Image (cartoon, rainbow, N blue to C red; front, side):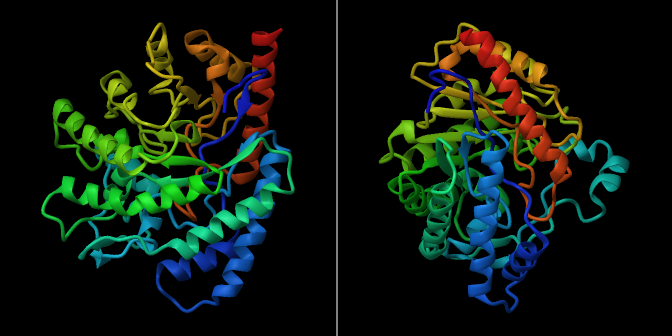
Length: 381
């Protein structure tokens, strides 16, 4: 979608889960007994409520909040065969390792990644059609009750699944990523066939540099990123680019981020993606200046930017005027019709680990919608 007569508003995806829903998700994650019918009833009602809440707070392009997923990448262990091994090694961010006292205060000795993450020990294939169909049905049912422009569903990129779930079966990382791409093609195409916008979550293209591949040089990491984008393009080859958008970020955590790879060192690779929508951080103070990279840049295609105008890990509520300023800067670079207001990342990309108090988070979303209105008045008059 494009902002044809005003700046549209969306967000990245994950939203807070209720305590009741969290109890079901935790039981599923740990393979504990739970009632499947009760879980689905709870999930369906939760999705209905969260879609209505998005619409009430001025969000035009809404989703299911990723409420049924334990995490934006690790959920794939429930939809792909072959992941039955021991837990993958804990992920560590090099920027946090540089400040161990802060790391312990922020996340505790176990780190922020506490979900079960089994390694791959066998051939990968897609086995999640039943859960996927339920996700689609519940979102479509909720959409019927609001006046949102459209709905989107998130799906993890091959590279982000490879980041969260370890490999103990395939000979190389590249072979592992391509096997995931082959399997996830089913999920991508099923979402698109349902008439929803497909959002590919690919933080591996940014965050992967200082987590999974922190030992590589920039040129070496760029080669890995090329592989990840090629696998994503292959898996989505049968889907119209205009029906897809891709989100990349440098990690949704409140860290120093001084080890983040620069966008200038990745932008050419990102623009090789097939999706026509690019969701990227724009409020994170480590990356806010990078809006300048879009000045006079030939995008090559009709790409729409979804810049983050809200910082998703701070409790400060951005002023609508600041949001309007950020949006207008991007509009001046790529055209007002090619900008949609969004967030840096989600409120709760890992279930149970909420980045911002939910009430404050929703107030930030309302401020984003107000800022988009101000930007629209400036840009359309």
